[in-house]
Length: 475
Ligand SMILES: [Zn+2]
Image 1 (cartoon, rainbow, N blue to C red):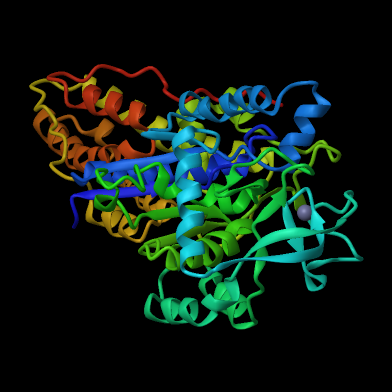
Image 2 (cartoon, rainbow, N blue to C red):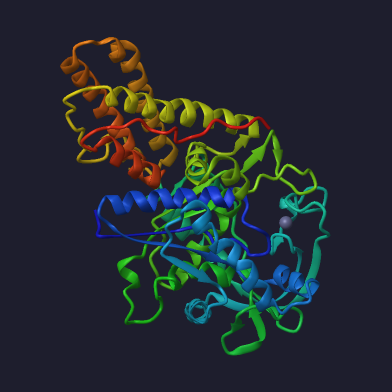
């Protein structure tokens, strides 16, 4: 195991408030980062905000602000996730940071030196919602399927292009030699199929007079960089690249998380850019699906949006972490409803862990000559094996199983019926071993609850516990 570990989320586009899908992504990255720290690795955990491009420029004008004022305000919503969900990121990069802008220009220069950037007339259908050019095959009824309410723009201008097509074979070779490069059910084969189908060179700049909100193209200030080409470089800019003096290569290559709508950009475009610049490819791309609500995509117009803050209001911060971590993260889309989230919370926190902790504390408090329980020396091998594969939800399941095992042991041994004090202390201690293992394993999911339970149950005498997870009020 190397000394250093680097993980980064995608940088969400600042235009909207953080949505539940991104909360899920950053929480998953947080659990992985906490796992690596617990294994003794030094961790850089990067997140931040993507702040250039037409959508932002338009929105700022709509609000009567400068783009910089607009992004300064919006970026804070994402920084606030740290407190809201107890996210332990170490780096927060903004694509408007001076260092990032210089790094993006250096990336451009290196790709240009390799002969991968050229100028060409550009006429294409463009979805401003995605900030992406769309090919005919991607359109549904002539519209972007993700933004059916937006007209596609037809654009024709002189632009710089990135020679993406040159990287078809190198990418296919890379995927073949790294069969677990993309983690997420079916996602590696999806990207292989996409690249096999042929790669089109794509525009990586815009005429500055048409849309000035971007990083200037090196040696041509009539053009600004296309937002994706600019933003992707953040993953290494945050490590100090490209300065010779920096230790960025002690951290790179790293592990990247993304939502499934980002698969192509992360697993193909960004990898081709790295190859072009002569830099090592990422280590893994971890791809989570979309969260829908009762079978429907979340949308303002349907009024079915569940925001991360609403979960915290209802369940509390740590319980929200656990509920989100319990959604199977690498097996595609998941569907939730408030009723099912309530049910999960009640089953696993009120009745599961919470009830077990209360019962054990109450039983222990009735014993004489108490033998202090000791915290386990290490986290369980089942948890470590799951996290080795970045399987955060599978890891949580091993903890839930352990809690169930304690419940079963309690029902079988019925320590409350045992009159002999020594025997009772003994039986409780056997159950306590399993329980404290579950509690110790919880440290990366619910850091505060784990610490508090460990302290309570390893004290010289165990006192009754006030319920940690209140029953929910009816909706
Ligand atoms: Zn779109």
